[in-house]
Length: 323
Image (cartoon, rainbow, N blue to C red; front, side, top):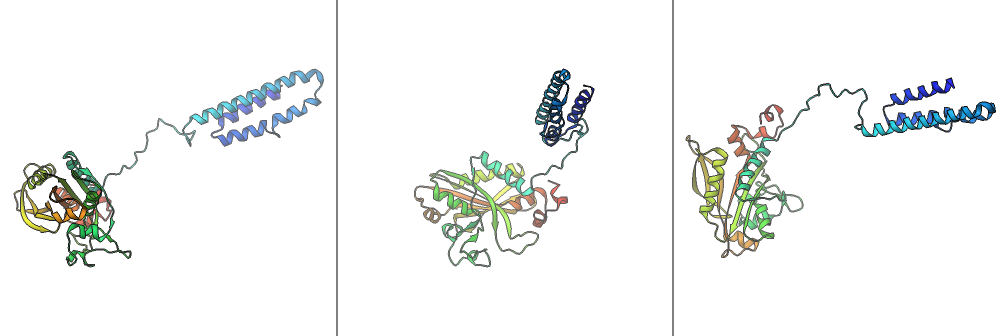
């Protein structure tokens, strides 16, 4: 009986030290398995004198019940602990602060611009980066002999497609599948085979907007851009509109801004050309609208005082941590 008491203390100690389910299972096999310690003791009961057999059998049954109970309780405790928690872990010790990332300045600028237009009632839409000539050129009233359709100015694929050179392609696809009224803004990457320097990149980001309805006028365009640019750069900004030419808008303008030290070209805009409406199945006698487009990198460079567009894409953490 003294040996059984010592055996119980041994089992109790080993169960308390177990730190995972595998350890508990090894303890069960050692003591309660087919060749375990308690199993062998039960097998030896037949050789014990009859006067002692009853008392010893009861003691063995009690030890077996105790062992099963502590093993079951230990498994329950392990199940309620966080998975993989080290038993030596002290939750009162001060933690290690993880390195928290942040949004890229281009992403920040896109979200800032889109936030203004969403409040003006525009819907953010997305589209394909690999496009067709119809959506990138033909539907936008860009003729076959236009320089932008040349292989020197556009990335063409081996399958007859191309990498979109403006997000106007998203506007075309939206008009093809939806009817007016329409008020959308399309941010995304565009691709042009430009030589990379401080102000040019073969890949950059654009945001283009489109509004189509029965009575959308040029004054609506001016009002939208007036609110947008003042939200972006402050109320002291000045704006001017210069006549320009784009194949997909008529009339077309370049929009300049000034902070009192000369003028800076910022974006292009205009009334949607009737030929574009005809290409997407709209009746130009029933609807009219305006479109505008701007470069995200240019906005970010102006807003944050950045002089070289290449800094956005070099992944230099010394630069990115500033934003």
